Length: 144
Ligand code: RB5
Image (cartoon, rainbow, N blue to C red; front, side, top):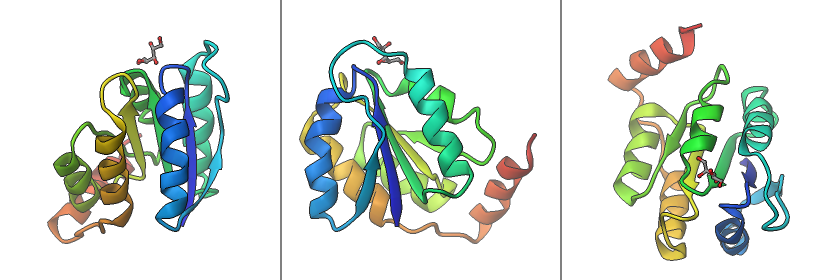
């Protein structure tokens, strides 16, 4: 599974802590920055990564800003993206099972590293359930 990871300054510290954990889990990722805590505009980063996921260059994307809200709003504007803002493990599990989310957003100023690790592990390892959820996801996908 190819994973793209990116953040703004509000998510920088959490992203840096998460990268070794993603490797530990056995996944390869591309880090799209940012690469310091200097202020950047999260839409620039979120749109670019979401476009790459939508084009199929990556299977999944993980975005982190201060709250996770800004990056998730941006990602969900890109056709083909289903980005779930998660602050708890159950949401991470259910968004994979029910929404087949292909992007995960988290808030670096909202959750701590242990919660973030549990969310990432759950989100990366939980399969889409299909069935009745397939029809609903198709309805999302076909909306222009
Ligand atoms: C940046 O200060 C902050 O607005 C951003 O990280 C994010 O929380 C936006 O939703």
